[in-house]
Image (cartoon, rainbow, N blue to C red; front, side, top):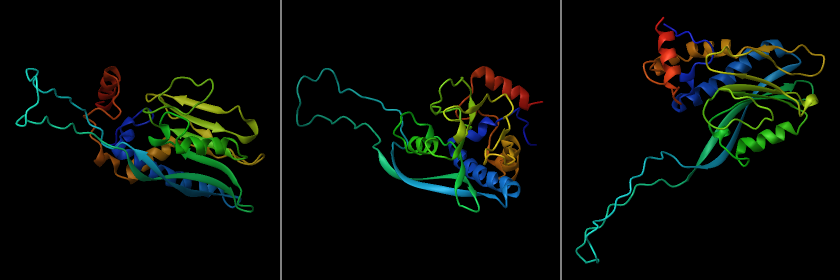
Length: 247
């Protein structure tokens, strides 16, 4: 039986599952938008590829001391065991996003970004931060969807504390933008997709789209609802969740 969540399903945020959810979400957004955008606009799935240096599989480290009674080294002394560590490696990163393009001119009207854990790293030097600054300095609208509790939220002046957030930055209104903050016990707010002035703006309902993804991707077979989601909820929230799912 499909669990009934009041809004975002926090189990979808599991790092082992999120890349799949992210890919499905980008494609389903395009599939839901194109029937109402054409023939003037079309939603195009785009992908950026870059190299990223990361620490993979960091484990807890233990430090051992040799015997304190040894006052000098001898040729027969047993060597202490080395400490297992991880070194940075370079990996190829592929991130999908959507562009709403004007069919007649090819102009990018709106960029839709669904944030990943890599795009929520702290610091201004990340690949996504550079892409974000470029979008905010362009004539394109930016829609930024953050459905991850972990990581650092992207910088927004006057931002309120929340588990998740949707930012709609209209090119003609910058630096002012529309922010939809919400928590995991709250419904995911629908919002209008910005287009050219005077055009009717479709409403994006992420909750409906995520419910469809859950069914089509058979995500129920990949989730164990008896365990804490990742990242974990507080004890009080997890207790509330268990009671809610048992109804």
